[in-house]
Length: 113
Length: 113
Picture 1: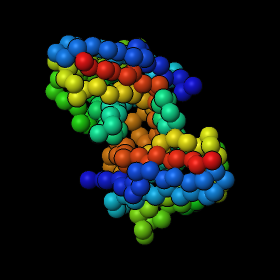
Picture 2: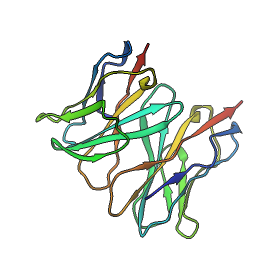
Picture 3: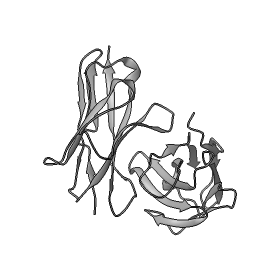
Picture 4: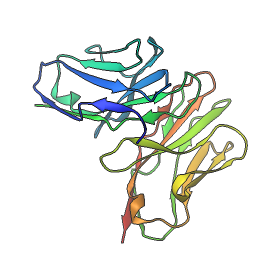
């Protein structure tokens, strides 16, 4: 158990819909990272937050957004969903912004029908 | 920009045989290198990391990796694999000016009984 929790575990929705994925980092970790893992794209870094502020952006679509709240939990919002958004979405956390081990949550499996 | 190449998408090996999973990265002044493992239906967890010091790094579950600066490689090895090592292994690199992790495409280790 990494100490990172993600909800829900599974999510099934339809094209055009909007969903919110939630992540609680390990106690004391200030950085949260979001990743998308799909069969065709592999593991893709989406975005990082540090202590409530956006720190780095990866291959995140404009239809996707994220935020980190004062209690350090984070939410990833996916809107206007397409079939190709079906994937595993992982959240990871680390203590700070410098190089550190990232601790991964169990993931949310999103299926868009 | 940094890039990471995992040369094999799948590596089949017999149980109790040795294995090497290859990882090459694009050169940089200094790098930090990681191997993560993803067991079926789970998130990623850190196997080992190289930040500085000895180029031979030992990790969990009997794995080790050697940092070779001249060949820009960080290959992962285990002298004798077990069926429980069946997983996907990811190599990741971070540069000194950018702490973001750049991920390889992953290598599936398939253990044959």
